[in-house]
Picture 1 (cartoon, one colour):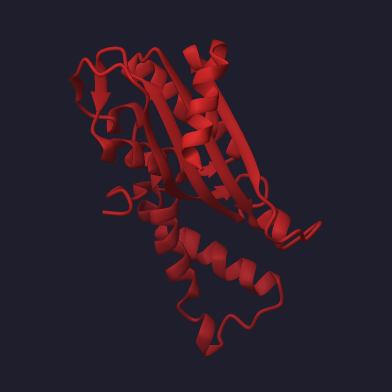
Picture 2 (cartoon, rainbow, N blue to C red):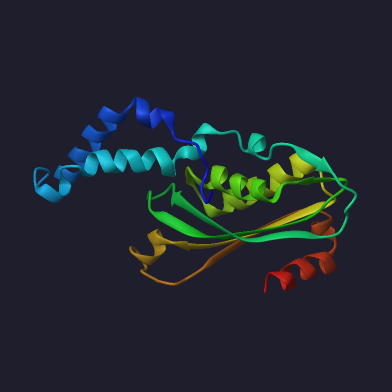
Length: 195
């Protein structure tokens, strides 16, 4: 399963009101809200909001689920976790990849839990810097590893399609906790294994 199972129930509860507002926005930007191509747009946008803002429905710590006692204390990397999010400044999409490395201290989590964590954290209005820190903090809190490092790559439509219009530019953010903060060799190993 590529995405989480959650839906934003607040959107569902306010469906009629959201559809009215979407219709009004379309009218205010100069569209003919009664033309065939736009008749169902308010309903489609509302259904989309249920999905793309589903991160509000889950506690990200809970999606990590059960951890397992495992005496593996070598570097674990989960890379290329695809995410899609919405910039809180323009409500424009941004997307990319999350890479996670951690040094277990007796506990590991199922690999699919990392993808679920990324989905819950990114499926709300966000900024890339917060996504990066939030994932690192949750993993540090739940797994209590010797260290964790998170690298997030993102392409932001608010930068590509408006303003400076720099298509293809990438934003890269990182967060380090525990031994990754003090051990440059460990950081280097993680970064080299991402290539």
